[in-house]
Length: 335
Image 1 (cartoon, helix red, strand yellow):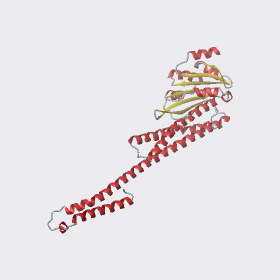
Image 2 (cartoon, helix red, strand yellow):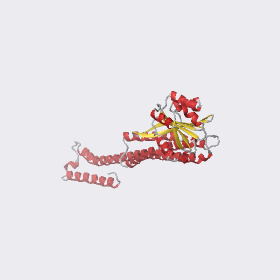
Image 3 (tube, helix red, strand yellow):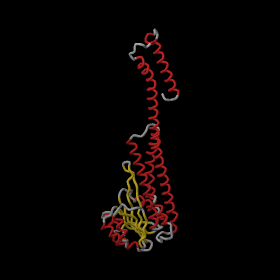
Image 4 (cartoon, helix red, strand yellow):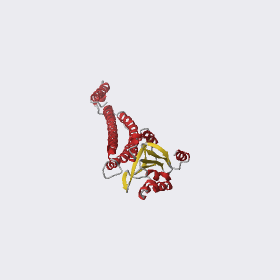
C-alpha cells in the first residue's frame, strides 16, 4: 500500500490534484485512477478524487472506473454550466459556481461533482480556491469524514458557499466608501461606471449562489438514496448560509441604488444652489444696468440731467436698491 502511495505521488497524471482512499475517515492510500473503481467497491472504503481542468482522456478514464453517464461527462468537460443537480442511475452529478475577487472584479469558476456509492469526484474549472484545505481539515477529523462520500459532498459545497463571504466583505467595504463619499460630492463618470460594475457583479454572484438552494433542497429529500438522512441537517445549514449570502447581496445592491439616487439628488441640489446664486447676482446687477440705460439716452428734455444733486442721488438709489436685494436674497438663502 505504501508502494502504491509513493508511486502515485512521484508521477502524478496531468489534471489530477489528488486521488485517495479513506477507511473510517483515515486516508490509507493514494491510488492511480485505474484502481479507483476497485477500491470504491470495497465495503467501508471511500475514494475521493480531485481533478483540475481535466482533458477528455482523463475524464474517460474516470468514467470507465465508475460507469458515469455520458451526458454528465460531456458537461464536466465543458464549463459554463448552470448550478444544478442531476441524477444518472446510481450517481449524482452536481454543478456549483465558485467566486473570487480578482483586480476588483468578481470572477467565477465551476466545480462539477460526481457522487456515487463509495466515491466522490470533484472537477474544477476556472478561478477557484483549491480544495486541498478542505481535504486537510477533514482528514484531521476522521470521525466526521467517516460518515461517507455524502459528507465529502457537504464539505465541498459548504466550502464553496463560505468562500462567497470574503468576496462580499470586500465589496461591502467599497460600497461603504462609496456611500460615505456620496454626500460630499456627486459621482463622476468613473465612479458611476464602478457602481454599475459592482451592481452587475453582485447580480451575477446572486445568480451563481441562489440555485444552490434548490440543490440543497433536493439533497435533503428522500428521492435521493445516495444521501443518508443524518446528513440532512448539514445540507440545511448550507442552505442557511446561501440565504445569508442572498440577503447580503440584496442589501448591497439596494445601498448602491440609493447611493446613485443620492448622488443625483446632491448634484441637482448643487446645480439649484448655483442657479439661485447666478439669478440673485443677475437681479442685483440689473439695477445699475437699468439706471445706466435710462440715463444714457441722449435726449435734450431730461429734467434730472440739470438737477444739482442728481448724480449722487442716482448713485444712492442704485446702492440702496442693490443692498436691499442682497439682504433679501441672503435672508432667503440664495446667496
